[in-house]
Structure formats: structure tokens, C-alpha cells
Image (cartoon, rainbow, N blue to C red):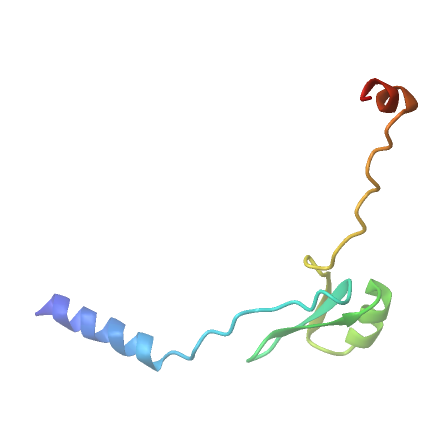
Length: 88
């Protein structure tokens, strides 16, 4: 009986709980503002940490580097002249 009560309580809590929303980052900008509150979210539209921090003053928020912003890829290694002639 006790186990059934726990199972029913667990099911009720799962049904009553709000739906979870997947967090997304906009890969267009390098910096995001994380806004705290009942419904926290990330606002990714800042070009620099300084710009984000300036606009976050007085808010319940912090600025973070966007982990999904594409970094510039290093150029491919150059082949030396010796490598080019030995391949022929």
C-alpha cells in the first residue's frame, strides 16, 4: 500500500510539473546574456562582453561567451615545395 502511494505521488508530481523548455543559443553572436528569474533564458545578441555587461547593469543577469558561436578555423597547413614535388 505504501509503495502504491509513493507511485501515485510521483505520477502526480510529474503531471503537475511544468513542461521543460530546451535551452537554445543563437549562433549568430559571440556573447549571450543569461537572464535569471521565474523563467530564465539566454539572450544571444551581443557583439562583446563589454556591450552585454553595460546592458546588464541593474538586471538580474550575467554575460557569458556563447559556446555555439563558430570560431574562425585556423588555415590549413601549407604544403612545402618539397612535399609537392615528392608527391608527383
